[in-house]
Amino acid sequence: MAAAKPAPLASADPARLREAIRNRALAVGFDAVGFAPAALGPEARERLAQFVAEGRHGDMGWMAERSDQRSHPQSLWDEARTVIALGTSYAPHDDPRRLAEHPDRGIVSVYARNRDYHDLIKGRLKTLAQWLAHQTKAGVKVFVDTAPVMEKPLAAQAGLGWQGKHTNLVSRDHGSWLFLGEIYTTLDLPPDPPARDRCGSCDRCQTACPTAAFPAPYQIDARRCISYLTIEHKGPIPDELKPLMGNRIYGCDDCLAACPWNKFAHATAEPAFLPRAELTAPRLADLAQLDDAGFRQVFSGSPIKRIGRDRFVRNVLVAIGNSGDPSLKPVAAALCEDASDVVREAAGWAAARLSAAANTHA
Image (cartoon, rainbow, N blue to C red; front, side, top):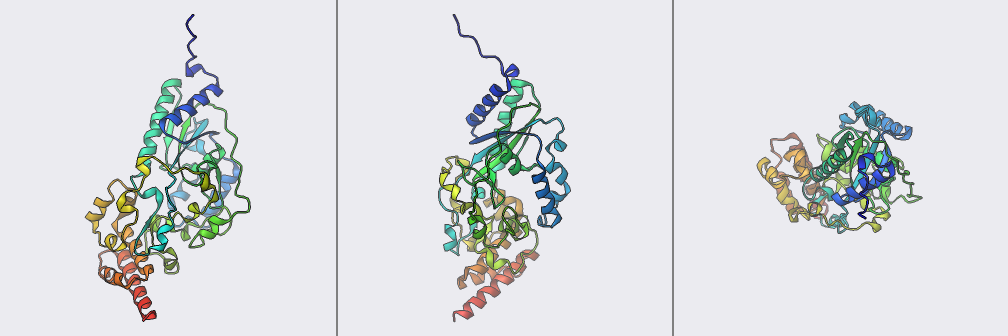
């Protein structure tokens, strides 16, 4: 007698359907999968409201403008019943802080050392969502850091990890190195239990921050965060923060890298997340001399491209000013007449700082 064929997923019980989705997600390339109701509790909403009310979002006006949609998933799509939270590990092969000992080189955040991760993650989300829609005829929508979605609270609610004292997601299996994405669906699926906070008394992420961007555990002031300053902030970087930035030129991983849970993370084998050779330890002198065309060519397909040449060179000049290397002073001086206001300001600061350092050691 022939074996009975399994029932189609469209008529499967919710538990079996959820397991099929999990298996498919892992097969597509995701490393973590969880399920949560399409709603957030009052704690996440209150945390966002306080963050915005105190102005800690800085120039990121979009956080305030769409905060209601961000804190109420169904206001983004009222038919959503379940959020499928998905994570992809980008754990590095070495400690991203090691370049701090080489002040003539620039530190680029781990996530930005190759192609823009949004493209890869969104492709996988669409593949999974299309399969799910075909199998069940359910409604689906995909998101990956491109819509007002509170990704970290939703991922924590779905059991992928917990929001640590650095406000980022921490996973028992992947540490602090997960790219997140979501599928909203009209399916009613059994939720996973929320992850338990396992930070305990540890405060390594907070004490690792070069600019003291954490006013309290589980709180961040973006206006002091190096990731915000080098990526989102459009104007000159405040003078009191420049010396604290060291040679970090795009983003910062210090709080993530300090987390002890990273010892359980396995370095990613995904080729799209492995660092390009030219971004592993780039020379500040070379980066500072990029014009707009050169910048676009070097960073084609990279998330760095979106901040533009002027902001990027601004960041590089701050790092040059912090290098203490007098041989880099001519590089800074050559940009004191640049067409960009933010480049000129940073160049003047860097040249003056290197002159002061040279006089001190004379």
